[in-house]
Length: 279
Image 1 (cartoon, rainbow, N blue to C red):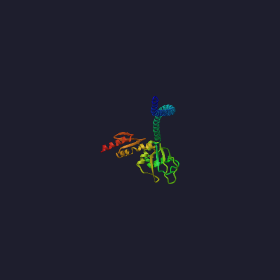
Image 2: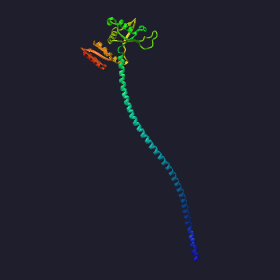
Image 3: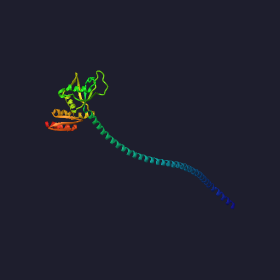
Image 4: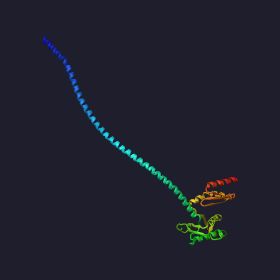
């Protein structure tokens, strides 16, 4: 009886153990798989960390290089800023020198124009006289020409000519316009009288050809004197005596007084007031 019970008990245990034994094996297999995967995961993480560390080292080196380059750029910027400040200072000095030179040049140019104008203010230009008429003696020819044109009543003595010459141009061919004769009159009054008579006796002719007499002013002086043209015309129409002194100073005789104008604007204002008073 006892052996039967024992065999039954063993059989009962054997019947109960197969399920438990399979579950434990699965668990072990799962744990083994997890352990293997953990090792693989650990190795993967270690590899990634190694790769990341290498990349970080490379990034650190790159950052160090960038910092070094940035420091170099900053230093260059400081140097450039210093150079620009120096350039600004030098440029300011150069601009000041240029302004001084401009002012000096303007002053010298004005003096040069004044000297040239004064050196030519006694000159007269005779236009339209055929080539060769002076026969090698231009000063004598111009003196005789003045007497012939305006008569001995106006010039009882020959007009003194300091020098005379043709314009410094190539001699024209036959049929071309003759060169101008430029003559320096010794006496300023003679020069003014010649110009006045040339206007009064216009047109002038010599040997059947029309000639003209003009003052030999510089372009600058000519422009300044021309600015008074409309004003002098109005003064002539008003019957007032006037004169235009060198280089461009208008003198007007009005009510026993001598008025002077160096500005065309002021002279025009005076003429306009005359017109208003007469109206």
